[in-house]
Length: 422
RNA sequence: GUGAGUGUAGCCCAGUGGUCUAAGGCGCCAGGUUGUGGCCCUGGAUAUCGAGGGUUCAAAUCCCUCCACUCACCCCA
Image (cartoon, rainbow, N blue to C red; front, side):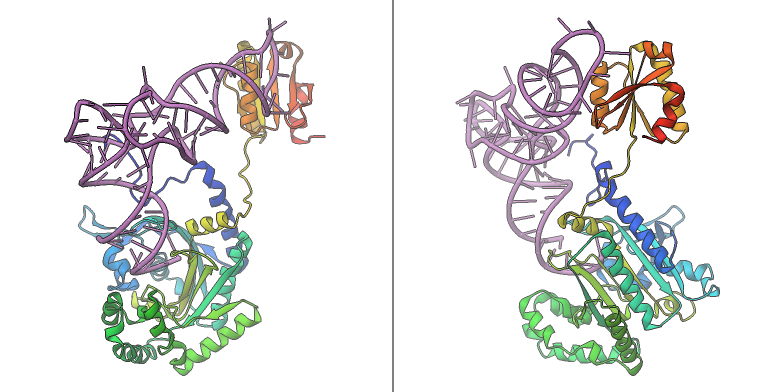
């Protein structure tokens, strides 16, 4: 690479003006949805102490083992750029004594997430997640609400043809027994598994279930199912959740191979995916993490949440050709005829802006023809033409760029005319 | 981290060893008479052909290394 060629680091992108309409659209829908369900926004630091993530996500997950951006700062602290959003929110909940607030506490965030991965479409080293957490209540109706909210959010964006996958992976009481029987089952097929699954068998038994190799999928299909091995409390919780989801007419399907990559999940896990899509198709997912807050040093506190990747949402909005409202630009353009009137043009622009009217100014060196072309390129609806003749009579020419009609109008009436067009 | 593909102006792309001091389209800029856009016409600017090195009389075209992107694995949003 040339010594003086600068490019954005691998896996990062500039979000250019042309893309911003998507971001603003999603941001706005997210905030609306959150308000509808009673969530308040929280912003946590971009970096945290490393052990917050290794303890919460799981020491032996891929995220912690090989994907974190970690470094030592000048004070010798082990720092990590946040690789997910839930643990920081839980840390903030504990640190700020939010258990003293009325429970549950409902928080949402929209934040940059950092993971050192090999970039692909829909996968970046810096990406953005919108997520929300409801902390301090174990009511399965809240699980249903969290899922319903995610679904409603995607619908409000105009995304269609999504599918909702659901599973329950039990709690610390019943999961060990389930994992033991799963392990037992897979040990019986050890020699037939793919090499990766051989490793998973030792390292992360649950993940055996979502291997994509056809043969491994056959084993997964007849493997013991977590939902069949729940303790009475978890079974009741899962039953109620499904009942509520049916009430809400959410088209979920229980997928017993659905497990998630972070260790803190308990009971409910779910994912939302487009019906067609490549490898990184999941646009959002979440679940319950009833032990996480306690694990981070808080009081035992049930909680659950959801997160979605903005870049993947945009990918799908484009794929489904959803029309996005454009970001408004100034409607008025001031052109000047002759260079002696620049002073007046500058004053006029400022006074209109002071009245809340968006204004662009023409480049003074351009011909009037070029200024009009410039106005057209910027999609101005009105062009104000100001020249020496106009200044003498205290008027301007107001040209409507859509109808190509124009009139001479007194300067004193201009503002009113632009604010209340006939 | 593994495997495969790709990389020519702001964008889309032609070009597979000499006629390439690189073609076309979009976009941009300017003109088509004196103070008026969009269509049309004419003209113009913009490319160290991803970077570095090598082979050759000759390289955008062949080889090597690196960088980036895309796809799959892996993982996940």
